Amino acid sequence: MTETQKYTALLCSLTAAALLCFAISLLTGPASVGFMDGLAALASDKRGPLALIMQEIRLPRAILAVAIGATLGLSGAVLQGLLRNPLAEPGLLGISASASLGAVLAIYTGLSAAFALALPLAALTGAVLAVIVIQALAGLQGNVLTIILAGVAVSSFAGAMTSLALNLSPNPFAALEIVFWMLGSLNDRSMVHVSLSLPFMIAGWIMLACTGRALDVLTLGEHAASSMGANLKRVRFLAVFGTAASVGAATAVAGAIGFIGLVIPHLLRPLVGARPSRLLPASALGGAVLLLIADIMVRVIAPGRDLKIGVLTAAIGAPFFLWLVLKHRRSLI
Image (cartoon, rainbow, N blue to C red; front, side, top):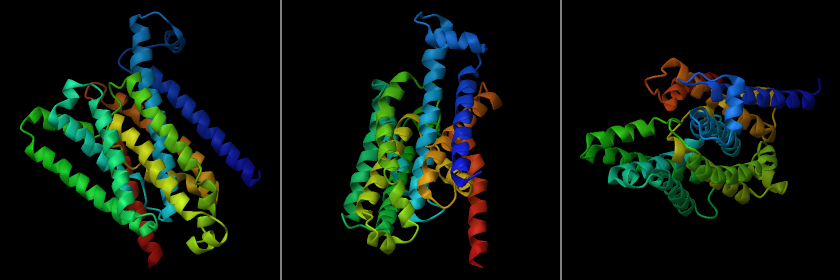
């Protein structure tokens, strides 16, 4: 098989895995639903109990798992290509931390209790403000190092403010809600959350996908890329704002879900060769598969305990991250 045929086979395999996991996700839950009965309930216009379970509970959850997993995988691949750093991931720019801060403030002030959509809207606002601050700190001529430092500063500030809100929370139930939300979950999400977040994620995907060819050239270095006609300012703009739009929207509706953007590009990079542009669609599909599997696992492992999906992805990703650090250190010796 040629390299192109192998790449096509990889994308087809990942797509088939995503469709299979999506179907399993729709059929997984405390209520036992047969495959054909589930399909009929999804297409039904009657408001029976089974149709309600499939259309209002399981379908939004599965759609969000696909969209958020694709967002995290795609943004991780783009940032690793842009920064030429194998340890880069979406949280590096402080977008997730800022979106979490916005949601925490909505819970702390009681807005989330008064208005159902206050929490995701506040999280989106936090993500947008983070991008504005990063762009202001980095400036129009900001290089990669400046963007990273600005992201670290924003992330540190957002983390400190989140801790302060927890520390000053007069209501222990509000503090508990904040902690649970920050662990990340797809439980109790509806089509309202899908319609709110999906347009932002799609806009982010389009911006991130437009960086593919430039990332291929960037493997030769910034000076070589500039001499070959790559517009590095445009690439940085698309990468930062694409990550902000997609990851901010994902965090707004699901909380902080980590490590997917770090793990998936590393797993798939040896299978796509040395072209970052090929890694982007593969990472998006791989991220969708991994988050679907994680969401299925939280319902199977502890069906009555509401195990948070962010806890499971961290349990998988943290050892992988340590392995990457040790591998990188050995390569320097």
